[in-house]
Length: 188
Image (tube, rainbow, N blue to C red; front, side):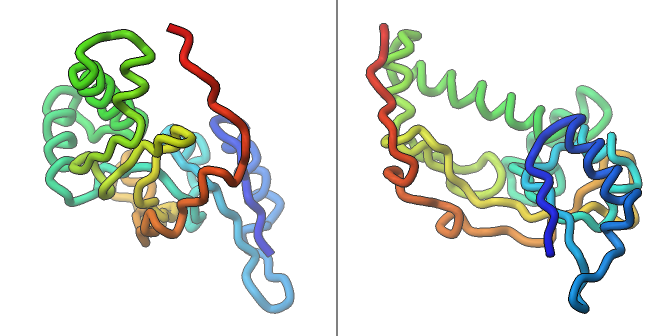
């Protein structure tokens, strides 16, 4: 059996803490270990959950331990400025700022409708975990997904999640028509 804590922030911290206190992380069901999974981890959530994070599986969009050139350059410059490695949130802000600036440059304007058009179907790489695409049909962003586990023996207060696998983008993509709906038109 699996308990999926599909919420974020303090709600996840409280739920995970309670699940561990109730003994669910050590429980067996039908001879198999019961699993607790957090679909989207952040450093703040991991710090908030403290010891309860150890051994808990989840996913994250990025981790400062990645060895690709783009991640290492960001970790180095962020660390030089702030004295510690960047969080997923810091990485997301950095990447989104670069993407927005690039989209404005490609569009030749700050007009939101033109910026949206520049991002539709845009593909890029070098920002962490592999090639990424903003799908034009539904504006979903697809890239490889990091599978992480709460580190049993962290080397620092920042080494809370260890990357144990990378799920290829092709395995997490779904058809743009799956959820239906219409994005509508841009209101310039």
